[in-house]
Length: 338
Image (cartoon, rainbow, N blue to C red; front, side, top):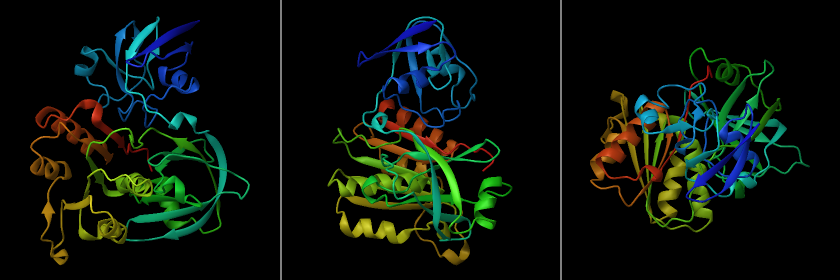
């Protein structure tokens, strides 16, 4: 049995097979519904069911609240139709044209810019072409069948070597392996590109980037892509970390400041150390944005980092500063025993 889904406002239609999620069917039909984790945890694929009934599937309550359900919303990565549907969702162009592949890669370099971050450089086989959009991610395919997701810090024009930023989580099996055992020239396997955290280039609105810790990685790719494309929309990066050492690629940010008059940078430290002698902004990164902007109705916001940070920003920006919900784009880093 199949069900027909119509997407508003585009009018695009696609068929969903039995035991298939709305998102799976949409991607199979090259319909660009936004998504992130694909496991009901991040909320990036949330949309409204305008007509018809769905089985909501398995999800985390932080991603889909009772209030969301009361408003007819669902997570399309885990919701399954029970009849023909009309849904309301913002579509993203471009990323569905990218072929998702499973590929081997060789560890080209392992850099340690501070005490708990590794910058991993990966080289693909010479005969493989890997296309992606800035802001997307890949899944490492582990021997036990598990996956670990990491955002690409590259822009597509600079993709000879893929760059990932991996933070060491105490007790994390994969991040512990990367920090303590992984060697250069080792072979890993991954699947990608995945995700829809990509720049909406059809807009002229100013952009606020909100990064938490290694949430800087995909935003680095987005900003370098915008620079390469000659996009001159006003852009401000708010990067929230604990202490000064956690601003681990300041030379990159300083290069943007020197080369892009329309770019500005606001670092925010939540717990600066005495030796930091920090005189800049402190506290929560989303609060710094609230302090600087009384009205966000004319902006786009791209947020990447811990789910709590992303959720706090979305709630505050949309309810107190007038940011349209469909102009908040996010990629929450959902923990998975990393």
